[in-house]
Length: 159
Image (cartoon, rainbow, N blue to C red; front, side):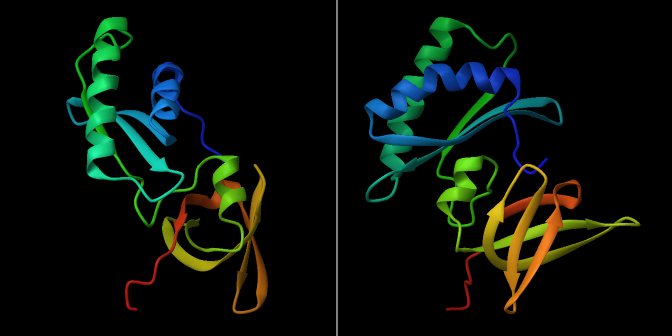
């Protein structure tokens, strides 16, 4: 499936983080709760509807969210909280991400049997849960969701 669901812990955090974000004029881009090595990471990616997000926005949000998480005690083991911007080459995971960036350049990492990958850059035409449609060199290319590893906005840093 192209669209990625949050795990149950991330969903619980989203329920308390969303009102905080709205109050601050921010938008939650994504939340992930993942184990890397022996550590758990709670990552909250924020965007701002107008003017772009700042380090101060992230810092203030992080303090408020951290306090709420401590009070509510939603997560049963220790973790590191990271709050940041999703970046210029942000990963697209939700239906509204694809709708917002239709017509923009994206980079798609694709699994190619047996055990190889390739990256395709093209203009996002559409996305459903089953497939992604790109325009590459004025040709339409359809990529099945089962072959997609990651989709993100593409920014040409050569300019």
